[in-house]
Length: 395
Image (cartoon, rainbow, N blue to C red; front, side, top):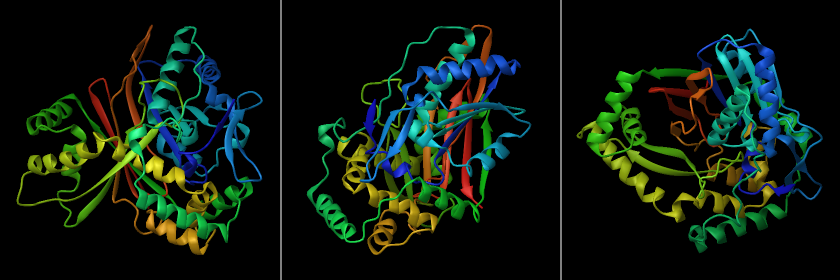
């Protein structure tokens, strides 16, 4: 296996790039049984048996690792402590470490580097894990990610943006630096010495969730659009809202980063109801979601930028590198003070089974990372008529 890292290159040097899910089961299970299922599930997914290589030319790619180097451990720490401790411990992706699993007092916790996959990927890993726990034989799942080559043809980048990137790349050539994993270590140490994150988790029980869904339906909008309108109703400015979007065009259930994203800008109108504002937000969302030129623009556009320049954006954000071109591009692309006001990933109602033999998943919580171009990140997921909404910010 050898897969070049293209559209997901911005995740390589990001210092807060770990996706977390907490899974509550309906019963306690022995650690050895859980670890065996975890190890088997890791062996099923190709990406979890790979590693990331950074070569002397600045190219980065996945290749097969010697065995799998993911871990499953037992801890007395709660969910928030696990996240706070582990987001500061760099995943050794150059050795093939993409996943850390924990048996904790708060349930099963799975932490995955974004280069191992997106939020959907982690759900599909959990499905594999649960099938292994039940004793089923699982077929090998090949790695799949989004590349410039396999993105829809309709998502072509407009000429102006191509010209802009061409200028950036030409300017970067004069000061180009190729970074390696030692720079990543230095970056993590520098950033996490003076940063802490805060996580808030809210449960919406069936009755409350049903009421939200009813209001959304009556307004003729998605739950996400309704929630956004409700979030910004007390804001007196235009909010820049980023939304992570599933980029799978073939409904595959492979692990790999297959997420894309759109953004909308909207100022809440206090003279209108939440429902009316939600309709306005929904119109902006649908305009971009229904057109591949918008839906995949960010991937195509970022894919044109020199890979090492993309690395430098995260290093600029972390405060341990500064260059004339990288500083300018970082600010323009939201890696500085112009980060998105709100970033939302709604995994909606999970598309994996919740019952596996004699074991049932009762609840799933999803905590997304605060990527370098965001500052107020929300993760939403629904299972068993319970919706969990998490908010992840820097303190």
